[in-house]
Length: 125
Image (cartoon, rainbow, N blue to C red):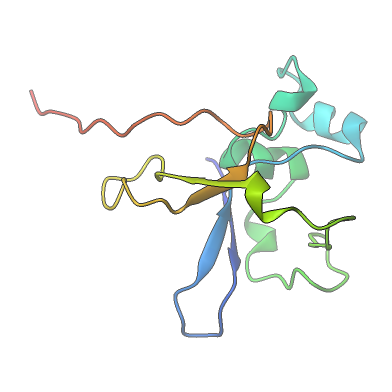
């Protein structure tokens, strides 16, 4: 079983969320490595939505948590703002509908972002 983390960005009852796809471990590297001991490179620890959750120890217990408070999972502002030109948009990954919409965002050149693989519909045999 894999867990992924969506951050709700709108008001209650409004469909607005962001799937967190990857991240870099900036603190607690020993804990992250213990959770994903088979990973060889640190850059791969949280590369991908399920790997990010495994690295951070996020599971069903985090469901519905408030990310701006003092809970076990918190979002904090970046130390410095990200320049708009550093944000890249591309097609979605792993979905059959609207796979060509540019709703996937990442920081240009970030080594933790998994490579884009175009969706290929499966054919029935």
